Image 1 (cartoon, rainbow, N blue to C red):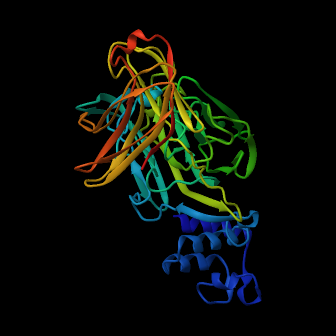
Image 2: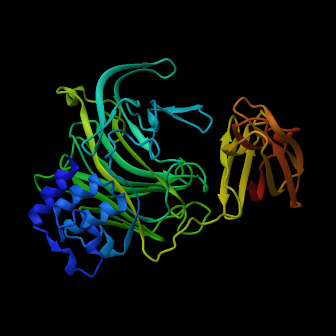
Length: 474
């Protein structure tokens, strides 16, 4: 149990301090009232239902770190999961299911999570016992009526819509079984893709491990433009001889405005302070709220055979485990690092049978149409997956200009393409302002679309650019 682990560690340190002699707050850690702060206070604290922050303070002190883990470095605990409840906390975590990446409307985008992964994620591959979350990867037949049949299952959980943060220190104590085609990952994605689709809005990989080479891990950031115009920066950490991811280690990232640092057991091994998001000022995209993801993938481009297949031999003796002791997020004392507010919403792109691009910039989005295609919706800029409620009124506003006079259709639609806003506008070199109120008759996920395909003969116009400024959906 986690209590026993703390007692054992603390016993090695032989920490026992007279509470009455302390003037720095130690007296409030004397839970069994024997005027000594020692390992037995941890047991009493647990039994008395002490808060996570109080337990953190006490465990940090017992382990020789003063009044709370990282407190001496000026960090204050903001959020944590110690996995002590006996089951996964649905108030903190959600499951991601299946093998396919989906858009915000539940439409299938690509299988293998975009990485040729072989596992099917379920909500049955996690357990919480004795203070440890275990994600199990299994070799077993699994068939889904929509996504097909698979030979492996695993789990992927995240804190999206439940907890996200901008800047701070995140610590995860974890271990993972070794074996070819295992891919444990502790990582983060943006709560809102305000700079555009992956990876324009960024990705922070706290730890990724290769099951075939457990003696090393890596820490990475992804950024730049939307795929395929993205890039990344990464560094490896090599464990001392005889050590590796199969043993317990603390993986940490300290994320400040303009710099991100990676640690293993408080040993700094990587610092990144030069990145970009196409069209936006530094430190975009890493100046927004990000949520946490934990998963154990099987196969795929990271460690799969031929960059695809899983190795059955890895599972010869049964399931493989990715164990997590805790996840803790700290805020740096005295630092106000908050998400940058944008003056114009970023647009995703949809191109079908046309030649065009959608580029987000500070204050505007430029849609370059080189060939408008044949369909009205062949070229679109979109705001995807906006949650709305029945009876709510929302307002879409923007300015627009075009290098060539042409028609543009602006819609707000549900997942069945029913339109709650449907306006055809004439855009020209003269910049004009528009504002539309939209009311919905039921709860739904709505998409806002700026359609610039072959509308009213636009295919005959040749190359031109349409610029949308100060896009706002409220």
